[in-house]
Image (cartoon, rainbow, N blue to C red):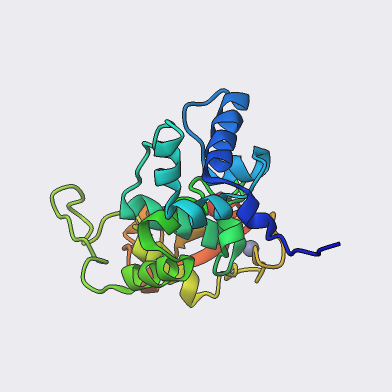
Length: 216
Ligand SMILES: [Zn+2]
């Protein structure tokens, strides 16, 4: 009797992998397939497929499936990171990005654009910390204000970062209680002449924010 070692992974042929992509897409009745969909419904893993074919889109092409046609702009990708970061009150992980309850763009889109999740995070942080465009003065629209009422992504994130993603009034944070929702609020209300500047902005939870607007 002769014992031989068999590498299980090598037994899966390219054809098997591609066929399984097709079968999985058929099963889901879709002309394309995301890595997440495949991981949940396919026989192998999306990482095994990308290891074999280099990229997910190459494998899709071989299986005659359509590329994911939705490409997001960097701003859309960053806005979604910001949304998730604020919602959980801390730096999101790849897993957080695949949680469709809090993230509208999956980690795969970030990996396709930036290669690694850590690169996406670094670029996001560099983006929000970039100087220069925070104080978008626009005198045409608001003649009695120096700044716009709207709080842009950079400023919103900077305020929350400064306040450690906690409510300035009651100290609650989504990192401790996932039901907490944080907002950025004008300390002196815009309607009373308050400007959209870092020192006139604060982080409040939705409950405290509501309480404040009832008082005013
Ligand atoms: Zn609060």
